[in-house]
Length: 511
Image 1: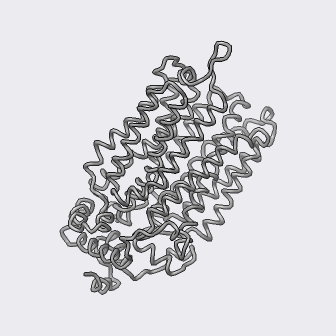
Image 2: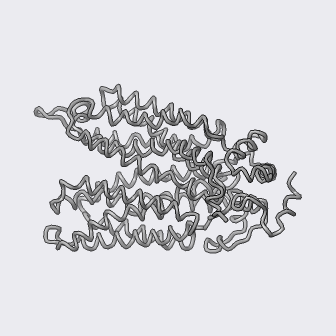
Image 3: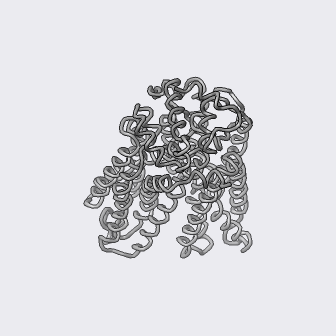
């Protein structure tokens, strides 16, 4: 018998996920290219200041170009919930593409740094929308058996976009003509155009359509997403009927208020989601980005720093991929706990060895630090990064999924801003010792994950509400046997049929 993942994976499902993941490419390409873009001579010649016959980018100007776009991202994160609720996922992605195209046009036609920064702010609004829309769509259209693989894939594809962006900037590292910055910037149009071309052929989320009372369209779309045998056997009709029943019983047409995030058992979910996003920004990635370059120079490896940086990014992408494959096999908790423990180990090793004089450090110790820098990104992604976006997309249950995700990604933006703002000020005085801070965050995340991070593997999105209403400890989520309609949906999504637990009796309640 085929595994649940293989059985539930269809061409339309995979195509739809890939079409929406063009937003993740946009996300990665945009964020991955700009850091390198600022160092390109062609960019500095256009937006820098001439001093003694040479151009440079003033520190204040550079700081503003890096910090102001976060405003756009916050707007995009909080605006995503309203956009998706009113327009649906597909139209929201059209809006993302339009915003990105406008932003890139503003950037490409810029002759002043202020105009380019305005384009960056607008582009970051698109990124904020993507962070919410892409994983949420993956969670809603994927059956429970494949949700870890498909809904959690945003950071894997974002990593590929990061690599593409960094590679483009590297390719034009010595170009002094305007094309040196224009071509890497123009690359950001490609995923936006692909979204416009591909998303029209994807089905709108059946869950969103049911919320809007469009039952026939929801059934038609679910039939496209699920295996043909499920359509023929009536499983998809049962799933639609059950989803309609859940929506009616929970009054989910009213998608709740923002203050509801901090009430009842939603407060626990909001706290879990926000903590995951904060941890993923503070458990080690910034240590590599901030200190690694200094270490390479001190060891005389500056010429190879780009190679080592790219190698670390590739290893991080591989780590993301491994985590995606394991999500629906091992579950979320083991990856979070073990991954965080390994992050702690690598950070403490690098910080401990790095306290020695870098010039007198023996080769084996230097190679160990280098290995920590390269391996660490894989485990930051296996642990918190993958889990943050996947859990954020599923933990809110029937009514509050989009708001919970929006709040989580907003916390992600604020944490990222604070870390990237504070770290450069700490680095000159602390040096490698800053690794002890990030290592301690990783150690905290091991303990926090064990006691507070729940396992949602193979659960339907509607089943999540019953789990939290039961007031279980995080360690007992995987053992709890639910009995409501959420369990019925999980059985349909995982097995394509009702299980042997008498769930047919549950269907008597469904119109």
